[in-house]
Image (cartoon, rainbow, N blue to C red; front, side, top):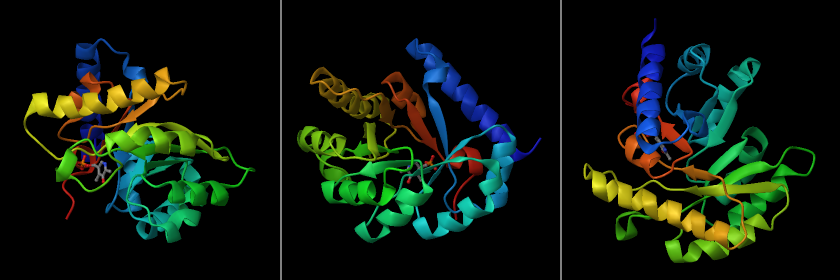
Length: 227
Ligand SMILES: *Cc1c(COP(=O)(O)O)cnc(C)c1O
């Protein structure tokens, strides 16, 4: 067995244990394998071990990999920071975009996606760690951006995403993930139907699952340390 398939088994076991602790169905949690910096051969190995959804951060790097692996029919998620001059290729090559934090970007994605394809699945990135993080809208700005994005054609707003500052403080980690869940639940009470919480990475996926994560984005624990 390869290291990657062993690692994948270990990550799946962590997800299953956390789901059980949370009283949740494991099928409700998607494992997104974050393959940034790793070559197509490693991704192919993960795919052979049953992994279907992959996350990439850098457009330039990901385009070659997506082309090289086209035969596998994998699902690609763009999870990195997105500049407005990159929206067209991202809308063309990816099924999901996790980090929408400006309406302008969402509008450009909607236009580039076009109506011929299935809608691009998007999440709004929220800054749940306050001053410590620069990415994402503030919790107070989330509802307005969500309403505006939900009204755009060719996109389907699925939910919220966060990258909290790393911490070993489990209660603090849970508090930040809980904030994202509460924001999503408040949006749903106001009439939206958001099913996705994209939160939790290699070091904190348990805390995220306990607070309702439906997508965990895991890189290091599957592919090893990035250089
Ligand atoms: C790199 C990255 C991950 C994966 O982080 P690991 O700690 O390696 O699991 C998850 N989400 C985002 C947005 C990332 O940039």
